[in-house]
Amino acid sequence: MKIKVGILGATGSVGQKFIQLLKDHPWFEISELAASEKSAGKKYKEAVNWFMTDPIPGNIQDFKVKLCKPGLDCKIVFSGLDASVAGEIEEDFAKAGYVVISNSRNHRFDPDVPLLIPEINSEHLKLLDTQNYSKDGCIITNPNCSTIGLSLALKPLLDQFGIEALHVVTLQALSGGGYPGVSSLDAIDNIVPFISGEEEKMESEPLKILGSYENGQIKEANFKISAQCNRVGVIDGHTEAVAIKLLKPAYEEQIIKLWKNFQGEPQKMNLPTAPVNPIHYFEESAYPQPRLHKNIDKGMAVSIGRLDKCPVLDFKFTLLSHNTVRGAAGAAILNAELMLKKGLIK
Ligand code: NAP
Image 1 (cartoon, rainbow, N blue to C red):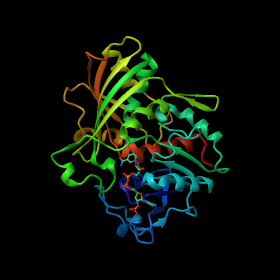
Image 2 (image 1 turned 45 degrees about the vertical axis):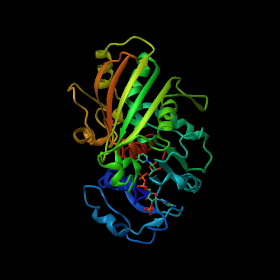
Image 3 (image 1 turned 60 degrees about the vertical axis):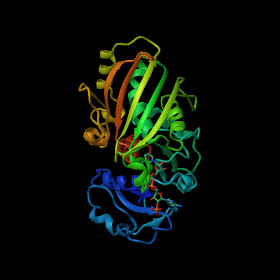
Image 4 (image 1 turned 30 degrees about the vertical axis):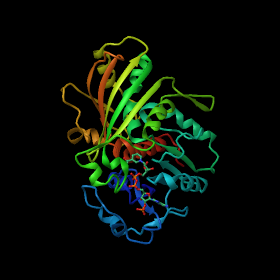
């Protein structure tokens, strides 16, 4: 029998992607959809402005949208809630015994909440032993959409060479701003060189993610990140131009080999949403590109290319990841799969 899951914020950009990705999931079935008072009480197809390329799954169209309040018939809630309301609602669900898997920023830096990327830091799930919401309830978060791709690219480099510092410039897709997001007059034929709060997230989250679990807490990784974030007229897929200074000398061939061979627990456990290879390296000089490569390995892989020596730092490269799949809904589903396989969902 499949495990019942609910989606909080089911009408939003991330909520819709959850519905699309969970359609034929082998372990989970959607039993509840919830959103704001504006949507609650309506049929899903009437409440949502659906902009996924597949139609709304037939069994979901007539679901009645509920309020985001405990009492939903499910064990896990995936949260794609707006950050202005996510914090308190997610706590209420955890206190009521639900496993809350969140995309929002609110609880990412709570000392007892894992900021999870299963290929990198599954041992951070030990933090759940220190949570006190209720006997079975807990909160797990996935990082910001740009941070996930960057952290996956950094992990093998950190392990092998150490990192002293890095600079990253992002070119972030419109869907990352939710629906309706940036207005068309700002988006078309334009670049907006500001995304509220994004640079702060990119400069802090990788340090928790890449930190080590020690004596019931996370000791953060110790290197400096400088981020500059831009919104560009791309629908899905965040691109990032990275320049990095390592602590030990490295050759380009070594770095590419590390990326190509990188695997984590999701691959060893063969989790349904896990990419076969979390990192794809392109030798072609004009790759990766969002339109061509965002969906590689079910949209769960990070594409990297253009590795070269950097005259200022040590190396530079370009990466791409799908912001609502690897950067949000897909990441959260992978987190739930890992927890289930590890026996952490009762
Ligand atoms: P969005 O499109 O604006 O959707 C927000 C959702 O929250 C909608 O379902 C909305 O329901 C619901 N909501 C708003 N106010 C509410 C309230 N008072 N009570 C209950 N529900 C309420 O945003 P999004 O892009 O999907 O992002 C959702 C979260 O994921 C955010 O925290 C965001 O930072 C994070 N995130 C987004 C991405 C991405 O690529 N988009 C990636 C990673 C993380 P109604 O339709 O009823 O208003």
